[in-house]
Image 1 (cartoon, rainbow, N blue to C red):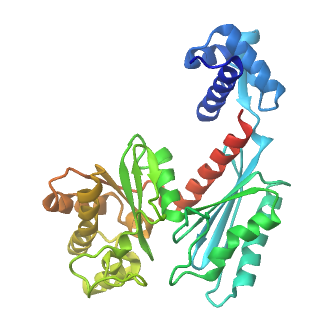
Image 2: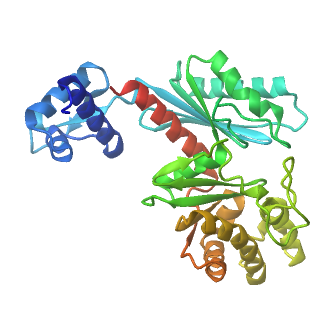
Length: 374
């Protein structure tokens, strides 16, 4: 069945808006070429979008080409403002941008482990409010929060997890209560995968798994270009994966004995000490025996992922993946090739510590676009 005229207009408008977002300012002629629409149809949609306050003229394509076809049309960047929060066990980082993703302000705040739930939440909310004020933003449209732990797909809330501060679970709901904005909550590893997919090491891939290697260990699964969360939101809880070389088996209440025991930051630091290295600089030392030993450990978890999902690509992220870089990734790939008949490329993160915050900003921008774009 053919689309109605109103539906066709909405689809054309959304296509044009996405192109302006992804490629920057375009002329009507460029929009015509990229969309495949007729010149009158493009002229109508430009007029429609300009009238709605989403698009405006930002310049001309060239001084030698005057006239209406030379006008450059771009999105109105301040039509909406966005914020992202990267929530860690003992800190929170906030970034504020406009609709185009232009950075406006950023700030971080340490949160002591002895801080109570209420004071910690108040401090995080106040940090966001100050950062928005510093950016000259009076109202935020969308706020995305990235935090460790499982997100319940039924409620969208962070589930109670052993070892995680209680203020993590309260933050998103308090932000929603206090701010006239749409607040979204997502697992930090999933957000890192979104950022690596769209702007980082996994760009151009439809299938990959991101291994988050930090204080905690987790994974994010992307298949067919889509993030897969699982029935209970727990897809990628690879820290609980039973593997050889640990002290025992994990349990429902703790991942000791699982892959976490081999690959968490504390385990990496202990392995460095065994090799006589300073844990703080071990990954950057280029020490072959240490990197080989660590690669063998990481390959055990990567091999399990490859055997079940066959993603074709594994991205090493988190503190260990970032500091180990391409050298560690290459060693893990070689070890993985010896363990699995499935060809799996291993890449190092290209976004590093910024991956979670960048993924949260992309999530907030998507949310704003869905609300604003017809």
